[in-house]
Image (cartoon, rainbow, N blue to C red; front, side, top):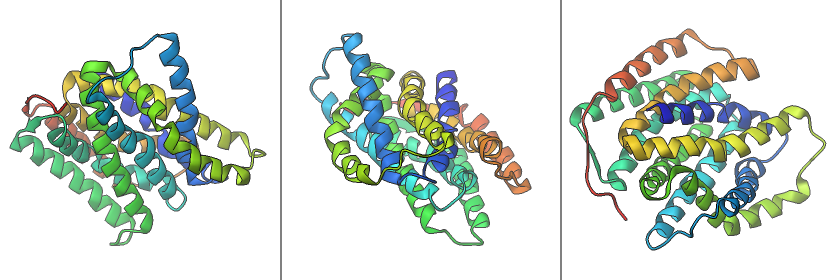
Length: 287
């Protein structure tokens, strides 16, 4: 749970940092360019530590992981951050724990109890209610991008968590980045001619954060936590990410924290506390 929290704390700055970067750069540069730079760092890490090549079915699950957390989530969340505040995105992404639990069932061979599903559903419903409240009763296009980001991350997190039981958390994200290079290069190279390098330090800082921490270092702790504690159970820690992101959005971007957000925060934190006490059985994971 502590490793999961460290990962979540790192990820909680992702939306504010992305929001800062997409002011000047396209979602493709911010969402996929960050992964391409991180992939170069991953190659260096793998070579220096002399890691063995993946084998057998590990290749397949690495592809699933990369589709979720290297392509899907970064791109969709960057597209959303063009149109809505990071604080809004933070609350919508509060359904990530439920998506991760579903991924744990489909991929990780986990079987959460009915009590677990109940508290996860309550926490997720609170998040959706908040999104509707903020959107005056309807979802905007950015919410659709955010829900697609949630779906991608849920599957990617689960696949990465399962693989981490065998390969290690940091090895999984490094290999997932490396095998993604052929898919990352074409769209990033297409956008490069329009890339403006004469931007302020905030854009560079935002991009640097999502590259080094959101796309690489955060997964070192996150994948390890999922492997040790189970995808569904540790995934519930993500409910706290919503409110950490709200705080960072206020601190870094000056976005307001409303009384409604604080009220929903109390409810979701309570669901995290209950969820980690519910039974989650583990069956042999997919390989």
